[in-house]
Image 1 (cartoon, rainbow, N blue to C red):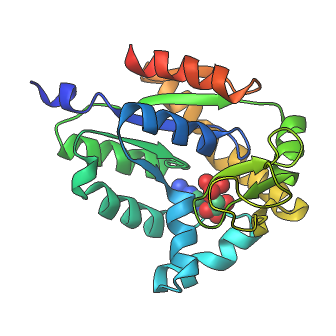
Image 2: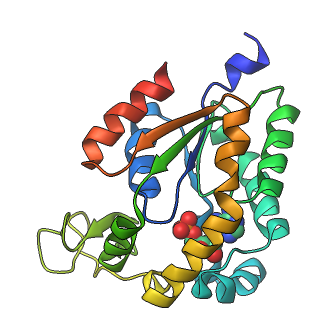
Length: 222
Ligand code: AMP
């Protein structure tokens, strides 16, 4: 087996905040048996545990700004070293800048792998604001709900473990605006970057989650 073959399952989810990357990543990784690596989740874990990394990242995250490349790159480098990443991994929310994309390229090259498979989940801004404003998360299992389109069975508690759902501090209006600005300025250019490498697949994120997951699995398994 060549190095490229070993890395066929290096998948990146691009797309603006609210595109459904986290929801889709959870569905897809369950089906593919590879770890879901969300830099947002890793950072939130660090904030929760008050690690030095978390203390550095907290204020940036609450304002909806990007955490520095140096911090995030180090965190991802460390995570990809874990044995569960050997068969592959799905990155959700990384890379978000060109510098991060270059570091990912380097990390894959160190393993003898080529460029990752990149999926861009497209969605309109009106839909983003609608989704993020009514998004609620289970603090225990991280399952995501939408109070309008995918509400929990019982008012404001998780269907799986009964924990009280929470709103992320950066899902408030002011922070949403900042996150979209950061996305436009620093992450959107990655679409062209990966398109030029012939590794980009566009997927319409403005549909029912099961439909999107079906298409994503097809794209990834091809
Ligand atoms: P997410 O859960 O992916 O929406 O990320 C939440 C927040 O974590 C973002 O608004 C950023 O502040 C920070 N963050 C997550 N991933 C990255 C990244 N790759 N680079 C910089 N900041 C990040």
